[in-house]
Amino acid sequence: MAGGERVAAHTVTVHAGGSTYPVVVGSGVRDRLDGLVGPSVRRVAVVTQAGIGLDLDIDHDHEVFTIGDGETAKSLATVEDLCRSWSRWGLTRADGVVAVGGGLVTDVAGFAAAVYHRGVAVVHVATTLLAMVDAAIGGKTGVNLPEGKNLVGAFWQPRAVLCDTDALATLPERERLSGMGEMAKYHFLTGEDLLALPLEERIAACVRIKAEVVAADEREDVTNTRGRATLNYGHTLAHALETAGRYDLRHGEAVAVGLVYAAHLAHRLGRIDRSRVDQHRDVVASYGLRTVLPEGVEPGELLALMARDKKAVVGLTFALDGPGGVEVVTGVDPDDAAAALDALAGLG
Ligand code: GLY
Image: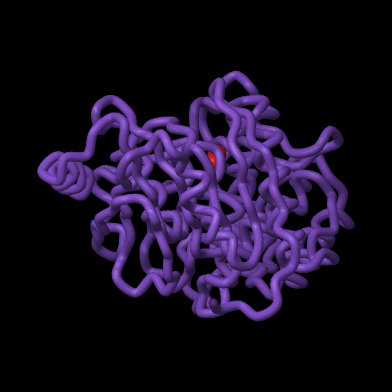
């Protein structure tokens, strides 16, 4: 068993969509998989990717289904392949799915589980920091279309989530940083100094923060400005940087820049003072993350992409800090969004 001495695991209970499930964080918690899948599940379809280095010892009758790497694998074609393979294998509604991997695996396998036989049980075994603190928690599942990311999906709450921190020992540095970007986001949603906590407690704290948000607004009600949409803090610029496709940024790295940008924009709109902008920059930097735009960005392109963000409902839409905390702000003037980009670039 990898991972050295074990410390007690942390369990966070998520209440969402009429279901209640545990998220267990700690070294070696993968050993709890059979117990959490439960005796009522006869057999298990394990969905993973090549190279996910987490050995699972599963007592349930099971078969492994390997999906491809990269965003192109996050497709309806992969979901169709999975469902057809499961059907040929004889997976029934009394059976279950176990997704083992990062956010791509939990999103795709979770969506296939949501639609196969109109819904079969799924347990997520998150192997990346980003999946542990975000993607595997809260029941969002889905795939991309050629027209955009995550355009087709379902809310499908898992039966349990296992965050086995042994998996992080082999996580590439850039993937670790990507997870740190989402962690920095939680810092601003609550003001908690998460970096002061040991890693497992910090992961559990992020899960608890997300669980509270999801419990209050599982379906991301578009009229709820302080609900689940606040989890997109820092994401409007991040999505634009990712969609532009020319910058070598992982998701969480892009979110990190997006958090500092959102602070500049909130300052521009009179919602926060200069010291709070500096605090954003300092906290993001303390997570070891980039606080400035990549070389060679074209502000006009980023503004156009932000205007087309899939979360936009009325004009330019951002989650922004303010006197009452982070909330969704719609109809932001493009001149203010442009000025905040200048400020981020040190020009304003
Ligand atoms: N990743 C944002 C959410 O789960 O709502």
